[in-house]
Amino acid sequence: MSARPGDPTNAPAATARRPATLREAWIALAGLSAVFLFEMLDNSILGVALPTIGRDLHASTTQLQWVTSSYAIVFGGLMLVFGAVADRFGRRRVMLFGLVLLGLASLSTAFVTSAQELVAVRAAMGVAAAMTTPGSMALAFRLFADDGLRVRAITLISTVGLVGLAVGPTAGGLVLAIAPWQVLLLVNVPVAVLAIAGIRLGIGADDPAELHRDPLDVPGGLLGTATIALALVTPTLFVNGGTGSWEPWVAAAGALLAGTLFVIRERTARHPLIDLRLVARPLVSSGLAFKAAAGLATAGLSYLVTLQLQLEWGWPPALASLGMLPQVIVLIAGGALVDPFVRRVGLERAAWISAVTVVAGLAVYGLLNELGYVWVAIALALVAAGLRVVGVVAATNVLRGLPSNRTTIGAALTDTATEVANGVGVAVAGTILAALFAGSIVASDWDASQRAQFQSGVTIGGLALTVIAAGLVGWGILRARGRDLTVPDAASEALSR
Image 1 (cartoon, rainbow, N blue to C red):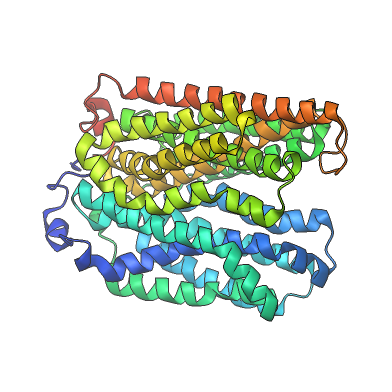
Image 2: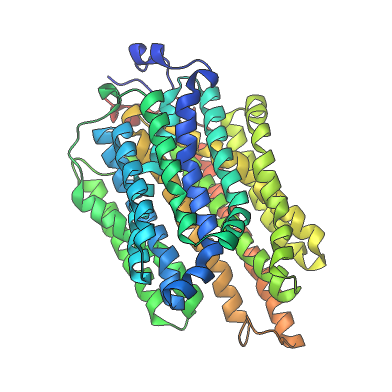
C-alpha cells in the first residue's frame, strides 16, 4: 500500500535521507532554480530580440510569430506526456535528458541562417522545456518531507525565475547593443550546465517506490497533446483573424473534439495517462481552478494594460514598461511574504484568499481603469500579490493531493492549466477589443469615437475576465469546502495502492 503524499511514513528510508533545511539542499535548489530561470529568461529575452531577428533573417511577420508560437505550442502540448513519462521512468532521468537537449538546441542557434531553422530550434527548446519545467516542481516537492519546506523551496525557485523575467528585457537590450542576437539564446547553454550539475550532485537517483510501472497511454498522450496544442493555437487565431474568420472556429472545434475523445479515452483506458478520479480530488481540482484563474488574469490584464498605456494614453514603450513595474516589484518582493502568510493561515486558506485577491485586482481594473493610472497600478499590484501566493500554494496543494508516483503529471497539470488560461485570457481581451473597435487599432490618428470604443473594449474586456476568473475561483472554493483535504477518500486512496 502506498502512503499519502506528504505523509512522513511515505517511505521511511527515503524520508531519512531528505534534507531538513533549505541550506542542506542548496546544490539541488540551485539546479532546479536554473531550470525555472531558463523558462522565464528565455521568453523575456526573445521578445526584445524579435525585430532584430526579423531583419537579420529576412523573416515575415508570420514567421516571427511562429518563432514564439512554436515554442509555446510544443511546450504546452507535451507537458502532460512528459509528466507521465517522468513518473514512469524517473523524474531525475527525464530532467537530465531534457537539459542536455536544451543545451544542444541552444548551441545550434549559432548556426541558424533562416527563420525556418530558428522555428525548428525553438520547437526543440519547447520539447526540452516540457521535459524539465514540470520536473523542477515535482523534484522540489519530493526533495522534502515537510509541506512548509516544500512551500519555501518552490517560492525560492519561482523567485529566481521571476527575477529573470524582470531583468530579461533590459539585459537583452544591452546585449543587442554590442553583440548579435544569437548570443541571447546561447545564454541557455551555461544555464543548462548549471542545472545539470546541481541536479546530478544534489538529487539522488529516482526511488523506484515513488514511480509506477503502468504502461504508457499512447492514444491518450496523442489526444491530450492535440487538445492542448489546438487550445493554445485558437486564442492567437481569434486575436489575429477575429470572430469573422473561419480558422479560429475550426481550431476551437478541433480542440473540443480532441478534448472530448481524450476524456472518453481516459475514462475507459485500463492504464490512462491521467486518471480523472485523481484530478477530481478536492485539493487537485481546486488547485487547478485557482491556477487557471491566476493565469487568465495575469495574461489578460497585462495585454489590456500594455495596449492602454501605449495606444490610448500615448505612453512611449520605455515609459509603458515602467508602468508595469508595480506588477514586477510585487512579484519579486512578495516572495518573502509567502511563507509567513501560509504559516499564519494554512495552505488551504492561503490558496483561496490569494485567488480571491486576483479577482479583486481584475475587478478594480475593469471598474476604475478610466479614472487614471493610480487605479491601474493598484490592479496590477493586487493581481501580482494574489498570483505570487497562489502560484506556489495551489501548485503545492495539487501535488499534496496526488499519490507520490503521480507527482510529475500533477506538476504538468498545473503548468498546462496556466498555459491554456494565459491563451484564453489574451483571446478574451483581444477578441472583445477587436469586436468593439472600428479601424486599425495600431493607427496613430484615433478620432473621438475610436477612443470611446477602445475605452469600452478595455472596460468590458476587464470585466469579462473578472467574471470568468471569479467563476473559476468560486468553483474551486466549492470543491474544497467541507472536505478534509489532507486525507483522500477511500475510493481515491485505492488508486495509489
